[in-house]
Amino acid sequence: MFLLVKDKLSEFHMLIEQIDQHLQQTNPYIVTPVKLEQYLMEGAYNKVVLNEKTIPSPYYAMFIRILTDTVRGDIAVCIEKSYKRILIKDAIQMLLYDNADEALAFADKRGWKREKDMFSFDALQATNEGPPKAHLDTERIAKQAIFYAKQLEMIV
Image (cartoon, rainbow, N blue to C red; front, side):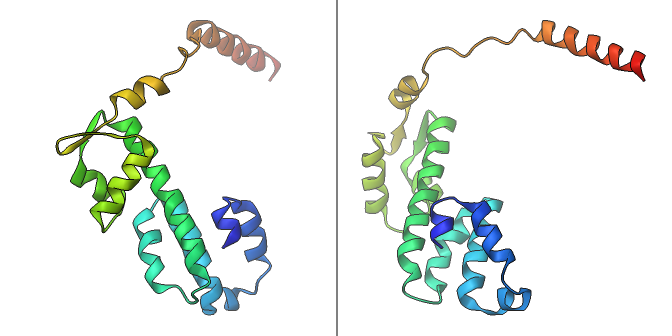
């Protein structure tokens, strides 16, 4: 669980591969982290949050809460980039909150501006713009790629 929370998926996979296949599929203490990792890879964040109710040990609760907070942070970043404004009720649903007060506290912590029944991200998007992105000279790159392809063709 620690490796999942710290986003060390390659190390997690290495450890899981060392465990007998039968034990991986039958031991609830191993099945739960494997399922969580699968949900994260699929982007099924709602299943990560719902899994909190079916953990095999109370010791997993802390890790699930951290993972849930991380998932909500990722969802919030996507919301901020995707929308200029969103209904509060829709944001609460997207963030997988059952309690509106918790969702509003989360939004305040992230600096989301409330306008009646909506959150506004205009100020956040303006500050996240940063310097203009470098322009790629696609025409030059395409000509170089064609030149290299012709050179390779002559060699073969």
